[in-house]
Length: 193
Image (cartoon, rainbow, N blue to C red):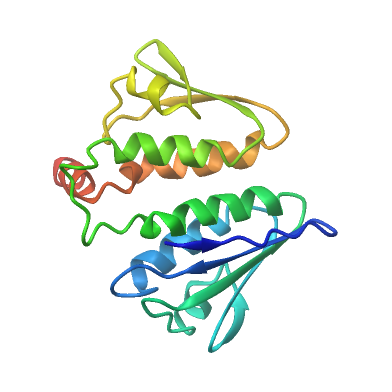
């Protein structure tokens, strides 16, 4: 996803313009993931595309925009955690909403670690990932790699700072979704269900 960032800080309002790079557009999986992350923040979120402007936490409203490949979407967040919200939604969008329709899994075997570090970097808090009694800075890809973290692992997070609550919620969602690594999600689902 290409980004043209216009982050405006006025009265806790932040916005960015994103280009939808997913081949199938802003369809069900991207919309669900976008709304799911947006709901974890206190900020009000709006998404504007050619068909109008809708609340960014509503799957039905987002689907009504009919976003297609190449469309631009303006995302605006207003509230105390608006900046972090925009950063997290941008990370999601720039990684094609974590939809892996065309991803080469052999070229990006560590995509789960990259996603964790990118999401953790959206927050001002200090975030440590803990796995099997080993700890690493969650914002540092190299440090995370030293943990031997796999998509099916469930690290814990030690978070200290002003936006710890939102950081915890976003990272817990990422972990519970197997970092949105779809081949691993299917494997994990077949083992549990």
